[in-house]
Length: 242
Picture 1 (cartoon, one colour):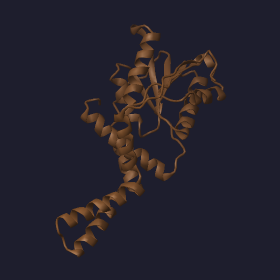
Picture 2: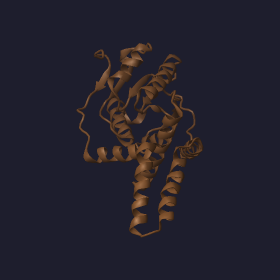
Picture 3: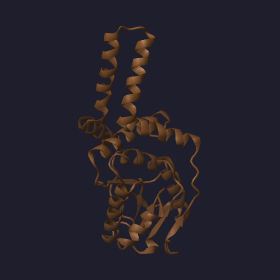
Protein backbone atom coordinates (compact mmCIF):
# COMPACT_ATOMS: atom_id res chain seq x y z
CA UNK A 1 0.00 0.00 0.00
CA UNK A 2 1.50 3.31 -1.09
CA UNK A 3 1.48 6.31 1.27
CA UNK A 4 -1.28 8.84 0.60
CA UNK A 5 1.34 11.44 -0.32
CA UNK A 6 2.15 9.44 -3.47
CA UNK A 7 -0.04 10.75 -6.29
CA UNK A 8 -0.96 7.44 -7.90
CA UNK A 9 -3.75 6.64 -10.38
CA UNK A 10 -4.85 3.03 -10.74
CA UNK A 11 -6.89 1.64 -13.61
CA UNK A 12 -8.64 -1.73 -13.94
CA UNK A 13 -6.77 -4.31 -15.98
CA UNK A 14 -8.69 -5.18 -19.14
CA UNK A 15 -6.60 -5.88 -22.23
CA UNK A 16 -8.37 -5.57 -25.55
CA UNK A 17 -8.33 -8.23 -28.24
CA UNK A 18 -5.73 -6.19 -30.14
CA UNK A 19 -3.34 -6.13 -27.18
CA UNK A 20 -3.74 -9.87 -26.72
CA UNK A 21 -3.06 -10.50 -30.41
CA UNK A 22 -0.09 -8.12 -30.41
CA UNK A 23 1.46 -9.74 -27.37
CA UNK A 24 0.94 -13.21 -28.83
CA UNK A 25 2.63 -12.25 -32.10
CA UNK A 26 5.55 -10.62 -30.30
CA UNK A 27 5.88 -13.68 -28.08
CA UNK A 28 6.03 -15.85 -31.20
CA UNK A 29 8.62 -13.61 -32.87
CA UNK A 30 10.91 -13.38 -29.86
CA UNK A 31 10.78 -17.05 -28.77
CA UNK A 32 12.88 -19.34 -30.99
CA UNK A 33 11.39 -22.48 -29.43
CA UNK A 34 8.02 -21.37 -30.82
CA UNK A 35 8.94 -19.70 -34.10
CA UNK A 36 11.49 -22.14 -35.53
CA UNK A 37 9.38 -25.35 -35.32
CA UNK A 38 6.39 -23.47 -36.72
CA UNK A 39 8.48 -22.12 -39.58
CA UNK A 40 9.87 -25.58 -40.38
CA UNK A 41 6.35 -27.03 -40.43
CA UNK A 42 5.06 -24.28 -42.73
CA UNK A 43 7.95 -24.69 -45.17
CA UNK A 44 7.50 -28.47 -45.17
CA UNK A 45 3.78 -28.00 -45.88
CA UNK A 46 4.56 -25.62 -48.76
CA UNK A 47 7.05 -28.10 -50.18
CA UNK A 48 4.44 -30.85 -50.05
CA UNK A 49 1.81 -28.59 -51.61
CA UNK A 50 4.20 -27.68 -54.41
CA UNK A 51 4.97 -31.38 -54.87
CA UNK A 52 8.70 -30.88 -54.51
CA UNK A 53 10.96 -33.90 -54.31
CA UNK A 54 12.12 -35.46 -51.07
CA UNK A 55 15.52 -33.84 -51.36
CA UNK A 56 13.96 -30.36 -51.38
CA UNK A 57 11.59 -31.31 -48.57
CA UNK A 58 14.59 -32.27 -46.47
CA UNK A 59 16.70 -29.24 -47.43
CA UNK A 60 14.35 -26.25 -47.43
CA UNK A 61 12.89 -26.53 -43.89
CA UNK A 62 16.37 -26.87 -42.41
CA UNK A 63 17.63 -23.93 -44.46
CA UNK A 64 14.67 -21.77 -43.39
CA UNK A 65 15.27 -22.63 -39.73
CA UNK A 66 18.99 -21.89 -40.08
CA UNK A 67 18.35 -18.47 -41.60
CA UNK A 68 15.61 -17.60 -39.10
CA UNK A 69 17.82 -18.64 -36.19
CA UNK A 70 20.12 -15.75 -37.10
CA UNK A 71 17.45 -13.47 -35.61
CA UNK A 72 18.52 -14.68 -32.18
CA UNK A 73 22.27 -14.27 -32.63
CA UNK A 74 24.43 -11.70 -30.79
CA UNK A 75 25.21 -10.12 -34.16
CA UNK A 76 21.52 -9.45 -34.77
CA UNK A 77 21.11 -8.06 -31.26
CA UNK A 78 23.99 -5.65 -31.85
CA UNK A 79 22.78 -4.65 -35.31
CA UNK A 80 19.21 -3.98 -34.21
CA UNK A 81 20.44 -2.10 -31.14
CA UNK A 82 22.55 0.18 -33.35
CA UNK A 83 19.62 0.72 -35.71
CA UNK A 84 17.29 1.61 -32.85
CA UNK A 85 19.86 4.04 -31.46
CA UNK A 86 19.95 5.77 -34.86
CA UNK A 87 16.21 6.49 -34.49
CA UNK A 88 16.83 8.80 -31.53
CA UNK A 89 15.45 12.32 -32.17
CA UNK A 90 17.90 15.25 -32.34
CA UNK A 91 19.04 16.49 -28.91
CA UNK A 92 17.65 19.65 -27.29
CA UNK A 93 19.81 22.38 -25.74
CA UNK A 94 20.13 22.10 -21.94
CA UNK A 95 17.07 23.28 -20.00
CA UNK A 96 17.73 25.61 -17.04
CA UNK A 97 14.32 25.04 -15.42
CA UNK A 98 13.10 22.24 -13.15
CA UNK A 99 12.71 18.87 -14.80
CA UNK A 100 10.44 15.89 -14.34
CA UNK A 101 11.81 12.35 -14.50
CA UNK A 102 9.44 10.00 -16.33
CA UNK A 103 9.96 6.25 -16.02
CA UNK A 104 8.56 3.88 -18.64
CA UNK A 105 9.16 0.19 -19.28
CA UNK A 106 8.01 -2.90 -17.44
CA UNK A 107 9.71 -5.80 -15.72
CA UNK A 108 11.73 -6.02 -12.52
CA UNK A 109 15.13 -5.67 -14.20
CA UNK A 110 14.13 -2.53 -16.09
CA UNK A 111 12.37 -1.06 -13.04
CA UNK A 112 15.48 -1.64 -10.92
CA UNK A 113 17.59 0.29 -13.42
CA UNK A 114 15.17 3.17 -14.04
CA UNK A 115 14.34 3.76 -10.38
CA UNK A 116 18.03 3.86 -9.46
CA UNK A 117 18.66 6.46 -12.17
CA UNK A 118 15.68 8.57 -11.13
CA UNK A 119 16.56 8.50 -7.42
CA UNK A 120 20.12 9.56 -8.23
CA UNK A 121 18.90 12.48 -10.37
CA UNK A 122 16.60 13.62 -7.56
CA UNK A 123 19.44 13.52 -5.01
CA UNK A 124 21.59 15.57 -7.38
CA UNK A 125 18.84 18.16 -7.78
CA UNK A 126 18.55 17.55 -11.53
CA UNK A 127 14.85 16.66 -11.29
CA UNK A 128 12.16 17.81 -8.88
CA UNK A 129 9.57 15.07 -9.34
CA UNK A 130 9.42 11.46 -10.57
CA UNK A 131 6.50 10.10 -12.60
CA UNK A 132 6.09 6.34 -13.12
CA UNK A 133 4.06 5.73 -16.28
CA UNK A 134 2.06 2.57 -16.90
CA UNK A 135 3.65 0.37 -14.26
CA UNK A 136 2.63 -1.27 -11.00
CA UNK A 137 2.78 0.43 -7.59
CA UNK A 138 5.76 -1.83 -6.84
CA UNK A 139 7.93 0.53 -8.89
CA UNK A 140 6.81 3.49 -6.79
CA UNK A 141 7.48 1.40 -3.69
CA UNK A 142 11.01 0.79 -4.91
CA UNK A 143 11.54 4.55 -5.22
CA UNK A 144 10.45 4.93 -1.60
CA UNK A 145 12.96 2.25 -0.60
CA UNK A 146 15.66 4.24 -2.41
CA UNK A 147 14.89 7.24 -0.20
CA UNK A 148 12.66 9.27 -2.52
CA UNK A 149 10.12 11.28 -0.46
CA UNK A 150 6.51 10.21 -1.10
CA UNK A 151 5.52 13.72 -2.17
CA UNK A 152 8.04 13.56 -5.01
CA UNK A 153 6.49 10.43 -6.56
CA UNK A 154 3.54 10.31 -8.96
CA UNK A 155 2.40 7.78 -11.50
CA UNK A 156 -0.26 5.57 -13.00
CA UNK A 157 -0.97 1.97 -13.87
CA UNK A 158 -3.22 2.97 -16.78
CA UNK A 159 -0.92 3.20 -19.81
CA UNK A 160 -0.55 -0.10 -21.67
CA UNK A 161 1.46 1.10 -24.69
CA UNK A 162 4.32 3.51 -25.24
CA UNK A 163 1.92 5.88 -27.01
CA UNK A 164 -0.35 5.84 -23.96
CA UNK A 165 2.69 6.40 -21.73
CA UNK A 166 3.27 9.63 -23.63
CA UNK A 167 -0.34 10.81 -23.97
CA UNK A 168 -1.41 10.07 -20.39
CA UNK A 169 1.77 11.53 -18.91
CA UNK A 170 1.35 14.62 -21.09
CA UNK A 171 -2.24 15.02 -19.88
CA UNK A 172 -1.11 14.68 -16.25
CA UNK A 173 1.62 17.29 -16.73
CA UNK A 174 -0.80 19.78 -18.29
CA UNK A 175 -3.26 19.20 -15.47
CA UNK A 176 -0.54 19.96 -12.92
CA UNK A 177 1.27 22.79 -14.70
CA UNK A 178 0.43 25.93 -16.63
CA UNK A 179 0.95 25.59 -20.38
CA UNK A 180 3.51 28.39 -20.32
CA UNK A 181 5.76 26.58 -17.83
CA UNK A 182 5.74 22.92 -18.81
CA UNK A 183 8.75 21.15 -17.29
CA UNK A 184 11.37 19.43 -19.37
CA UNK A 185 11.14 15.65 -19.34
CA UNK A 186 14.06 13.41 -18.42
CA UNK A 187 12.74 10.22 -20.01
CA UNK A 188 14.26 7.09 -18.48
CA UNK A 189 13.85 3.60 -19.88
CA UNK A 190 15.93 0.80 -21.37
CA UNK A 191 18.14 1.65 -24.39
CA UNK A 192 15.93 -0.28 -26.82
CA UNK A 193 12.64 1.45 -26.02
CA UNK A 194 14.18 4.88 -25.51
CA UNK A 195 14.22 6.12 -29.16
CA UNK A 196 10.58 5.20 -29.82
CA UNK A 197 9.44 6.51 -26.44
CA UNK A 198 11.32 9.79 -26.96
CA UNK A 199 9.57 10.40 -30.26
CA UNK A 200 6.18 9.51 -28.76
CA UNK A 201 6.68 12.00 -25.92
CA UNK A 202 7.86 14.70 -28.33
CA UNK A 203 4.62 14.20 -30.28
CA UNK A 204 2.91 15.45 -27.10
CA UNK A 205 4.75 18.78 -27.51
CA UNK A 206 7.07 18.02 -24.60
CA UNK A 207 10.78 18.78 -24.36
CA UNK A 208 12.45 15.40 -23.90
CA UNK A 209 15.93 14.58 -22.64
CA UNK A 210 16.40 10.82 -23.12
CA UNK A 211 18.39 8.88 -20.54
CA UNK A 212 19.09 5.17 -21.01
CA UNK A 213 19.03 2.91 -17.97
CA UNK A 214 21.04 -0.26 -18.52
CA UNK A 215 19.21 -3.20 -16.93
CA UNK A 216 21.06 -6.34 -15.90
CA UNK A 217 19.85 -8.76 -18.58
CA UNK A 218 20.91 -12.06 -20.07
CA UNK A 219 21.85 -12.11 -23.78
CA UNK A 220 18.53 -13.77 -24.65
CA UNK A 221 16.62 -11.02 -22.84
CA UNK A 222 18.58 -8.32 -24.67
CA UNK A 223 17.82 -10.03 -27.97
CA UNK A 224 14.13 -10.23 -27.07
CA UNK A 225 14.00 -6.48 -26.36
CA UNK A 226 15.90 -5.64 -29.55
CA UNK A 227 13.49 -7.73 -31.66
CA UNK A 228 10.41 -6.43 -29.87
CA UNK A 229 11.40 -2.78 -30.13
CA UNK A 230 12.45 -3.09 -33.78
CA UNK A 231 9.02 -4.52 -34.63
CA UNK A 232 7.28 -1.84 -32.56
CA UNK A 233 9.31 0.95 -34.16
CA UNK A 234 8.39 -0.27 -37.64
CA UNK A 235 4.73 -0.44 -36.60
CA UNK A 236 4.79 3.10 -35.19
CA UNK A 237 6.37 4.29 -38.42
CA UNK A 238 3.52 2.74 -40.44
CA UNK A 239 1.01 4.36 -38.07
CA UNK A 240 2.62 7.80 -38.49
CA UNK A 241 3.57 8.05 -34.82
CA UNK A 242 7.28 8.73 -35.29
